[in-house]
Image (cartoon, rainbow, N blue to C red; front, side):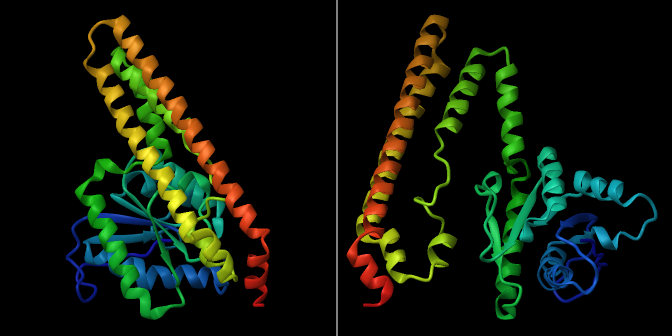
Length: 303
């Protein structure tokens, strides 16, 4: 979506500083529910928040210049100082444009309608969840957006995403420095150790959208919490050990010793992977046992 704000256009808006914010959002025909929602989010939340931070806000359907619209959109995505991406409705154009922005390694702020799931590849990126119908919360959403914009401005080089991480990994692998190559191998193994999202390690949306309070207690009960914390504490301790092993690689000058230190780190990562999988398996067994228990059935049916 593109909408232009001019300097002095409203209360609390900073003068036009030349900074541009491009908004990626699902668009449809005028009068459609999708278009109505996107327009509302743009006008009530994104535009005022970005304008107060000194940005001119633009959306694809509002570009005033003649020319090929696709080329103009890509140009904004590549060149604008900030992009806000509305991931609601899993629109394929939105995700294509988001991937292009990720390749630039420039700041992007994600938002999505409450209750909608995020695809796996972008789940780790902080995302503002909004309810466009909850007008009383619009000020909060604007504040959240301004906070993320400020964070992006303070650390413009910290715009990490799956593509930027892949670039970093490739650069390490191509380095002539053995230490950099070793770190690339360790990062690859750590990514492989990352457990996949499953229904047995549910997100907040999964838990709190379920109609049964009994199921919520089963997933978040004291025993479940204690076991989850136990796994996290084990993982934290193992990561501390891994940090020491990586440090050994960095300070070891002898290549044979470096190879030995790298092998130690790789062996330890394999141990971490087994610990994580074992913990998840135990968690799954515990939840399956609870869901099949008579106590759960009684609570779920209100008996």
